Length: 274
Image (cartoon, rainbow, N blue to C red; front, side, top):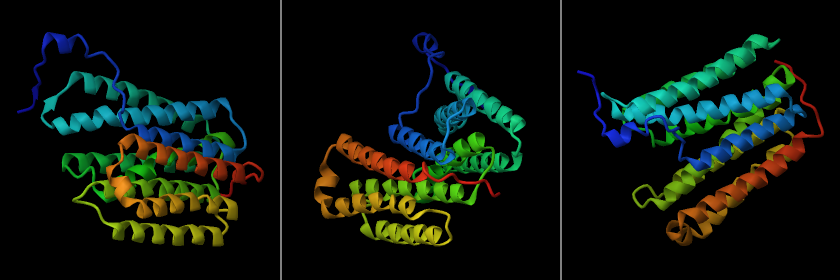
């Protein structure tokens, strides 16, 4: 039978305190992806700001929701409260953006993919498979939806190059999965990382060939290839260095990627074609 978990009076006094996701790396992913989408739109409007708040609240809602799913049959009022608050804000803004949009189906498609990814993540958490490579790939792709979200609400439509931009962001940030796993002795393997980066490079070249990415934008993926190459050359250091240095490496790579991608997107305007 489902029961309400008992808590001490001290804990009850703090049930109202907001939850904050400890996954600091995802903040960077969300911000960089959103900024590349805004750069592609070549402008920043008040709807862009609303979209950023929506994406941020959706990300924050995931943390208490995941913690509650892990509890399974024990209900935590604080987790339910803040999952509801963050999720409610995100849903309200998302629906308003959809209602006022002149081209609704691209935005609805973005929401649909985000909802599907959330459901997959929830099932993975329930099955204790949240840290699987496939689930983490889906999670990064979902967070990177902030790029087409920013573009769609700002420019009023969607374009194939922005779909390519979403794929570029997703592949770039998913690289971190294979780097971090090298720090874990049981999961340390360079083979999976080499396969991923080889396949990802092929996809990026394909997107360039079909003109979904400009040459300079596609070249931004070279940052992650250099980063992964550095990790392979310095594996012993990478496996034993402090996690703060790993985070710094990832942040610097992300900022370099943002600089190259954003500057390459600012001059040409991507015309909505979907």
